[in-house]
Amino acid sequence: MSTEEKSLNFIEQIIEEDLKNGLSADKLRFRFPPEPNGYLHVGHASAICLNFGLGIDYNAPVNLRFDDTNPSKEEQEYVDAIKRDVEWLGYKWDKECYASDYFQQLYDWAVELIKKDKAYVDSQTSEEMAKQKGTPTTPGTDSPYRNRSIEENLDLFTRMKNGEFEKGTHVLRAKISMNANNMLMRDPIIYRIMHAHHHRTGNDWCIYPMYDWAHGESDYLEQISHSFCTLEFLPHRELYDWFLNQIYDPTKVRPKQREFARRNLSHTVVSKRKLLQLVEEKHVTGWDDPRMSTISGMRRRGYTPASIRNFAKTIGIAKRDNLIDVSLLEFCVREDLNKIAPRVMAVLDPVKLVITNYPEGQEEWLDAENNPEEEVMTYRKVPFSKELYIEREDFQEEAHKKFFRLTLGTEVRLKNAYIIKGESVVKDENGNITEIHATYDVDSKSGSGTEASQRKVKGTIHWVSIPHAREAEVRVYDRLFTNESPDKDKEVDFKEFINPNSLKVIKGFVEPSLVTSKELDHFQFQRLGYFCVDRDSTPEKLVFNKTVGLRDTWAKISEQ
Image (cartoon, rainbow, N blue to C red; front, side):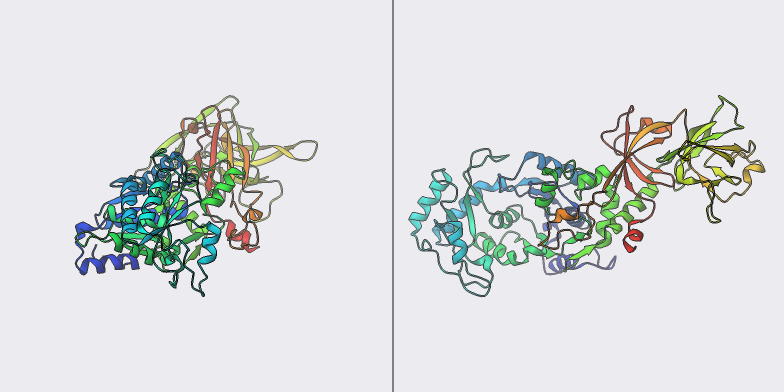
């Protein structure tokens, strides 16, 4: 990467400095290291875009490594979902790796630490260890087991590995210092006993490495040059380096950990624990519920890979945590869909329109453009007939001067069709309008080139032909939380802020061309917003999810 091409963020500056100081460009290697204990969310999307983006910019390989060191919370389902999400975002990894690939090597290194008197088996309870660890302002106290002999530690650790002890009876700790200012350096735990089935190694192991021990050593084994993580791991960097110091071979690449800030998204939660809670307590339909901040939820809602990549690029990389308004993400989605989504006609709050002077039983198939953003315009045929559905809000019996849609005595154009004039209404016994009657100008068909077709009218409205319309279930989504930071106040349960109106299911009607649409096909329902085909959809029962509106309406609502 040339520094002249663009201004560099601080992570790129770190890499450039290392290259200047002698790191060979062919030694660059990055990684994305998710734990397979849940589905990835929008925060992970930024990390994916960062690491794989660096791989693209520097023509360097990027590993996908699963930090699978806690089998009690990990499942193959999550591994599969993570791989699917990374691929969907448009990235390819060089090697698919697992911390579990290195369990034997990590164990062997732990044995070497014991032999060097740099690790010991502690037999205290977790409560006792917590008490003797001290506080940020007071030093810790040594474990009564800290000075066990090397022989005893080796024997106990071997027996831990062989499954002779119950969970919680022993742990292996690094022997660093109980007086360290950084509490993470106060003899951290390296291994704990867990009699749990691992999704890859089965029942081979009864002890499992802690994340801090496995992570840096996995980076080293894979020869990762730069290990980027979020700011909460900044205090862990000292431990990361201490562990590397114990095994480092100067002839090899030494990984460098550096931290960047989380970019939190408003009106969402991104804690896997809280997302799991939403799923398990049935506040949402699953990990891929379109209201969720998961990548799979955003995909099902109709967000595009390009829009998420552009969002990550727009918010950039920073050194301080920040709350990003979700409307910026929606802007990126809207901007991408505007370029790629075909325009179609759908009516979501229908009222019947009868064109009284249109011949009974006649139908026409009119040309409608698919997307005005296309370089080469393409068209489709839409059916037109005597009876149509229009949006109820597009008609007012008595309208004010700034209402430019259909009313009695005024003209509007039906999109791609004719100019019509409102004549009368039919009402039920409660005074509700059930039908609107209008007349059409037979010479005013769009694109016909007649003088009448070129007449200017102030309004254009969309419609669908009733005999040809297809009924559809439309799921209209809103923010899942009413509060922009639902989990900020630790005294209040984040679920208190769940928006009771986050999902509204309505029945609408769409033009018949949509019968052949497939899952995740995107469309702009003209004048209504962007929608995509849900996985529940069938040709017999069409189901659409509202992805995003044509403009940001939440900002106006929140200002009121």
